[in-house]
Length: 218
Picture 1: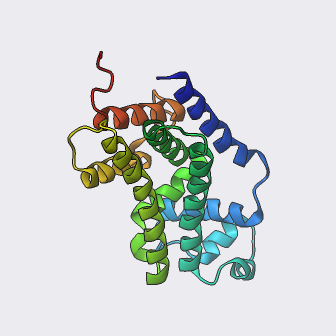
Picture 2: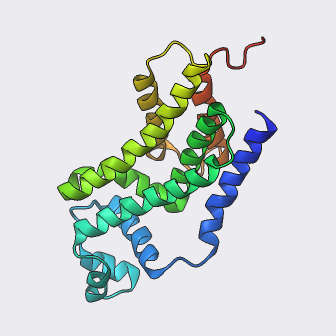
């Protein structure tokens, strides 16, 4: 890996941890705790009373922030996307090549969604889309497509300069995104690899899967 890539990965890690050093707002605390409750008990079974008791807020207080349980779920998933999008913007602003941009996209996504506080957001985005109201589902689907466009644009850039393997770009886009999206389903922080190590492994696998002659002597 190049020094620039390592620097980019460290910047991603610093930016990611930097968001959590300040005490989160009350609303974000509710989102985080609710996300874990929905995963532990299931969205349908978890009640607003359960959430109120877990977060130390009255049920009336919850309604101050959210109109319904479905509104809360949408807010949780949207917040997860907001965290990702902010980090993407930071990581891509000084990228000079599509290869490095693709590497940073995959690394940053993998790092954030395996982070203990944010993995729950990613899991809910996969498992509970069906529980959202149609308008919320459409909005979040648009945000997912925006991430796919980021990957596709970098693949198209690599293809334009002859650096992409002979692969179908649409298939490659969905495959690379899928490598990251399912990470929270099987990755365990207590395992052999840290979140940073796992994110690096996924990013390297992604690059080697699509880049022509990647790692081969010239």
